[in-house]
Length: 442
Image 1 (spheres, rainbow, N blue to C red):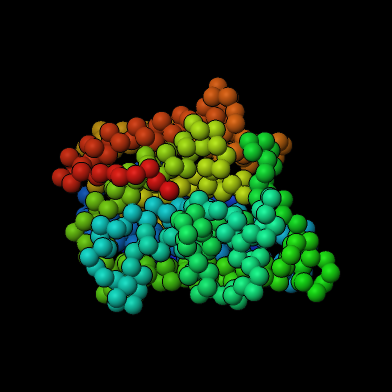
Image 2: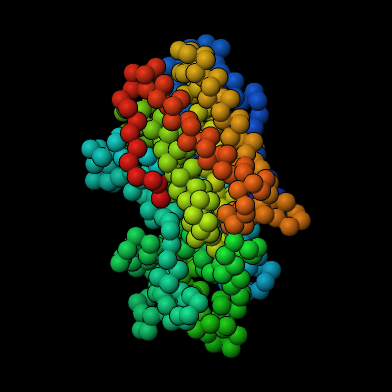
């Protein structure tokens, strides 16, 4: 782990982490994972000036922590899926679903790292044996939207997808990677959402309560006589292989940010630390995730279009988990900290510090905005997590605009988009080239 001068960075205890993972999975909610910026003292600023190099070093530390958690929770997901495939039942399927839910919280916080094209495009990192960029890598890990019939049967077509191909190729990681995006970008065959669809199946409830209801018998062996859909063996292979691929991908990414990577040419960490545009990239990522990706693509397209197909985790109805932790990733990047799944804190020099030491009023503007947005995002999260009659994001989409949950979601969208003016001020404050967005996210 790196630590910036004058700042403390916590180490991770793998034993404690294993205990934390087991404890977390005993809950029915990923909300058990606390958010770094919920603690008021974590939102404070340094009492002495920080340097850009300190901010960059801390950002690498945070990136490693988030990707390490993503990898570890994916490993827990893999173990749960192995147990499910060894003995398919309602109980083992539900355990796999809970593991998926837990895995979404840290990964969604890591997505703030995605917008790195400008600082990697000319670096040729892939030619040096590593990953070319977070943005390129992400398409294999978390691509969305996903057309279900590229993978498996759907309502009205029981023979759809790779799983049901007659004399289809053996399902291997190489084959799934080769098929990812073939015939259209929605033909996603790898990553979290492929696993999500396999565990839940289609959600045919529209804006009414209820997620997908895949039978555990879809994963019996063909010879068992219990298979509830054709080609159970291929479906088992697909779930097993796609989960293994996800774990391998996350392991590769976390190794791009560990301590040796910082001094190893060709890694993402080394490239970031040696980039003159690193701070601009961090700000661009904040602006892109807040105003374009989260506000527009992941929230408003569904809310304004009254279209539950636009929610990010539409098979599992866990979009409230995904979007809430996307926002935590924004706050983490701004305040310079991350709270791991075992409760440890990584914290150091931050963008908030850089802004505050030049313009305290602008820092306060961001700080107030983030706390206001958090209140609305928490309402959406808590609605989806309440024990009695939870209101998930697809149900919120179908509500009247005056309903408390939908009003909170729409207010959060407005507040996120309104951050654009604050980012414009930061550009001028730090003499940074304009942060221009193109597109509406994905």
